[in-house]
Length: 308
Image: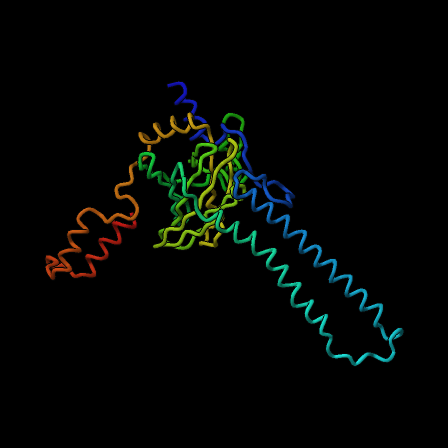
């Protein structure tokens, strides 16, 4: 039980784990990459930075040349040339080539970040106004809510534990726990308005849309705590929907799952399956015998079951 108690402290109590990635004051670049997707995002960003810098320098040099070479004092009689075939070909072909150079790695990154075929864990994130809830469908099918710990500096000071103060607007009372070096399939949806699940260090930003299940993935490459926030304006408390992911060893994760199965509630109806009895009611509706209920009521029951 000692190992289980240690996991309880690290997985459920926010101050007890090493930092994975978080925003820092005056930070200009990306947070330290913590997943293969973010590694490729940074690589693609570096390529674009070189391209746009070269374009900017070229355009600036061209403007300076035109300003000096064709100023009125040096060129009192302006040229009346209206066409130059070579220049027109170049300014059409060169931008196309630049776009092709950008498009190829861009499409590769989009497909790479889209989904994974060999997921070792599936997590479903559900956005609410204004907190997140999570389900672990293939780890016992339990669910829990995750809410912000503190909104102000005073609240964070009061919430300090073990001499460690939680991060304002970033730490949550219940973290998502994942095993390190494991492909995690992430399903994102919402129950009211559009939310967005985003962890910068993982290169993940995916909208949660009511009635729709979106999918992406990530793999934490090192142990620690990673922070993110809802990135879609979703109402008055939009700024108070943080996301905290703790990556631990597979042994600690297995121990945490055993504890979580006892601590958290079960998901009564798996996502995508109709509520109990809804299928029978649908068959009766098709047969014209709805037992006194309209077809619209039957469909509402089925949709409610699927939403759960």
